[in-house]
Length: 304
Image (cartoon, rainbow, N blue to C red; front, side, top):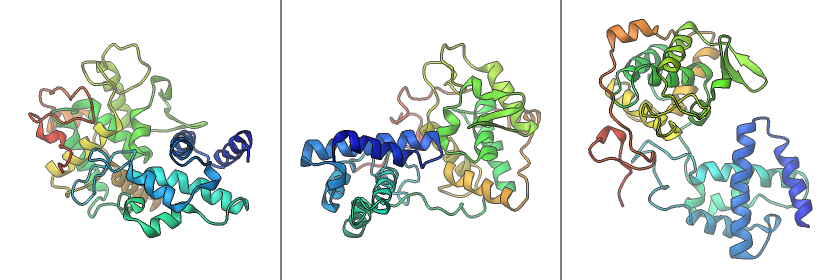
């Protein structure tokens, strides 16, 4: 198959994916696999074998990426599990189209543990009910790094929208209005408490040129998905809500609660300021992937 034909095939596959964010991530992850295959194996995507997937997966298991959720709950968004989901989706599409006989990612997962890197546990953490999510926002507000209206706005959006952390942290000012937050082609209404968090943060937001909503208070860099994941994790541990409560689990717990017709009653900003005042805020590391040993609550990456 010519490169132009493969390009059309990839475009047709991506067209089946409704989320613009997911399409962009899948295109990037598949493109990197294709580049590695061509450079190291001399073959194209449709000639991918299970051993190719295994070999490429092993190139992604350095200490900065290979984080076992049992040893360290924080998982980077570009782990093998996330990338393999994109590859497997493409090859499944090709199998259904009759272009290949079997999905090499599925074959690789059965042969080698590096290719079967476990994703986050899919069930919400035990005890993450509506009261726990309310308590989480209270603890977030008193966080010494991302507390106050900044943390409350991010975690409030996470709970209400049930988005992935990176969707929350990449919101722009144009995505917000009095009606709520932009979600694809529609506006998602927000409860008054979250509207209050966002309004307060926009008033405090540093004067930066960038269009995004969430910046570190100095304005030197944007808040990343890693920052938000760490915020949720340390706030949950500090509030006694259980070890390993991840941002993804929070979103899923909120989705499960709303699917039952129940609501998560988040406290208004005035109540947070009165009952859980934010302490003097400390500076985050310049690089969200790095750990500052003087700030242990930022969760060091595991050694070895």
